[in-house]
Amino acid sequence: QVQLVESGGGLVQPGGSLRLSCAASRIIFNFKTMGWYRQAPGKERELVATITSGGSTNLADSVKGRFTLSRDNAKNTVYLQMNSLKPEDTAVYYCNVDLGYGKYWGKGTLVTVSS
Image (tube, rainbow, N blue to C red):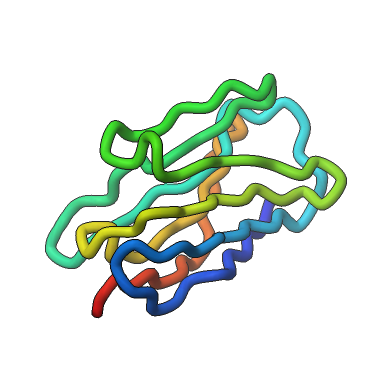
């Protein structure tokens, strides 16, 4: 069992930046992927960015060049640095870890991009 706790969401103006954090309740070794998904009102949940235990990252085309995913193994934490935010980035952002034998989700953090 793994608990994931997200933080860092909030209201930001277009063009602004936010950093989301996702802390896992325990050390996770050899996960398949860990990262972020988002769900906008009326839309399906979609992948934003994930990283493998080997360090390979995968970013959605819509966020490439603006978002960066990183991790701190000592803190069991992954970070999503979001720059040049757009109104269409508004969504609830969920942290996810896929251990292969099970997938775990955080409760989500709301990001609102609006002037």
